[in-house]
Image 1 (cartoon, rainbow, N blue to C red):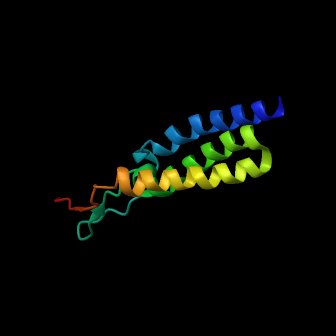
Image 2: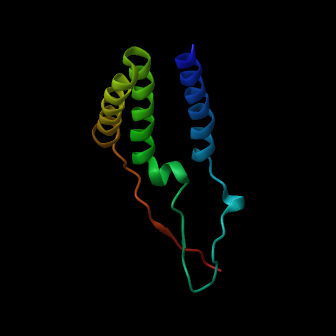
Length: 107
């Protein structure tokens, strides 16, 4: 029962935190705006850190499945397998194609 509660808690936390971190919060960002300076549009948190987030989610999901099936040792193996699968997905199957460019404003 404890394993199922732990797994449910982890899945609920990921279901809430991933969309929260992936949303853009333009109202909360502080940018120095001047006529002589440029403004960079780097995107939201997910766009900037998608590699780490994808590998982490894969490792977490693998640890949950491995923990349910094989206990502590299974969780470690599942985390390694899930992290590897997340890295393969992030770097080989769906690589980042967006280039960050500077956006110049004219006043």
